[in-house]
Amino acid sequence: PGTKLPRVGTTIFTVMSQLAAEHGAVNLGQGFPDFDVPPRLVDGLDRAMRAGHNQYAPMTGVAALREAIADKTAALYGHRPDPDAEVTVTSGATEAIFNAIHAVVRAGDDVVVLDPAYDCYEPAIDLAGARAVHVPLDPATFAPDWARVRAAIGPKTRMLIVNTPHNPSGAMLSADDMAELASIVQDTGVWLVSDEVYEHIVFDGARHESALRYPELRERAFVVSSFGKTYHCTGWKVGYCIAPPGLSLEFRKVHQYNVFCTFAPAQHAFADMLREEPEHHLGLGAFYQAKRDAFREQLLGTKLEPLPVPGGYFQLVDYSAVSDLVDTEFCRWLTIEHGVASIPLSPFYESPPPGQRLARLCFAKAQPTLDAAIERLTRL
Ligand code: PMP
Ligand code: GLN
Image 1 (cartoon, helix red, strand yellow):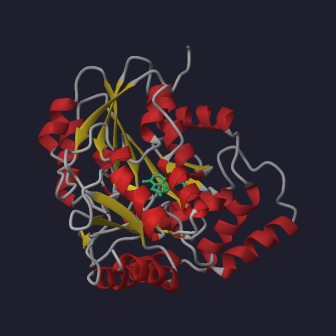
Image 2 (image 1 turned 60 degrees about the vertical axis):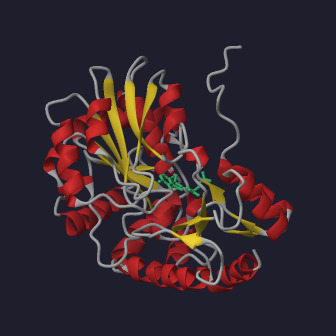
């Protein structure tokens, strides 16, 4: 009685990683790279700690890092946020998303999320006393149906959450999508969270459509990113939020009493890294595209059918030719009986499409890891 998140259990990422460890499975479930962090970044972290940057960072983030984020944003998206008033460094994108929701969403409000949706959105909405209104993405292409999004927005809607490139599907919003989005939110009181943690992992020459490119979107958006994805260090938990001054002010009220500040040595290390190796993130698309292409080629030798991957580091596969099990059961079976851990899609939905037989495989892995997985998957 009185519990606040009665429908929440342990996250599917933890469940599948534990199951993988128990059964010695190759873990392509939870999304994290298994290769090294850039050595320069590790040197920078070591240097920062030895230089004495071991006490509280400024609440909003180390100034040199906020400057570097502003410069990078200007170069990429043609808009330079004010590093003092509009950039806040957070303990991962997860903290940023939580803060954004709690900064503006009140009890009784509605927040629109597009299913399948990353798992941290809804619990944060629930804890705010608000209601998540789920609008399904197209089950084949994972594109938004903007007419349905428009129809879901009403007088109680306080926020809309979008994610591009999208986890779990890799789908990306197009410039046309951004125009639709802008026309839907204009003249409303709806704030946006734009979850862009995979912003640099985009393929085949596609352009990442950041909300920051569009004045009519960025004036109402919390744009969230994560250094974990960009620098292969998901365990460092450093991310950031870019939002207009008024929204950043409210965001920081939550941040300052949530964590107060983010791990200081890493902030110095990222500031140095962005200055010394500004091209790192520019090579990330090609780096992961090569992995994607090699992995997809290997999957052709299995009975799993790979879906297109426009961005991000997850490959969805249709397993209908292998099994009739529902996805959670299939992923357990695959881990226990065949030694490959994946992530089922149904936990990303309020109501999963009936008969959907999809699993998510993470290809942010060294080739020997992917080879070991493929060897096992070939035997299905
Ligand atoms: N959003 C999405 C779409 C993600 O995939 C992730 C990480 N898996 C996050 C947010 C959280 O990022 P962080 O680890 O920096 O908290
Ligand atoms: N974002 C990662 C994924 O989608 C998982 C992060 C987590 O375990 N919370 O796999």
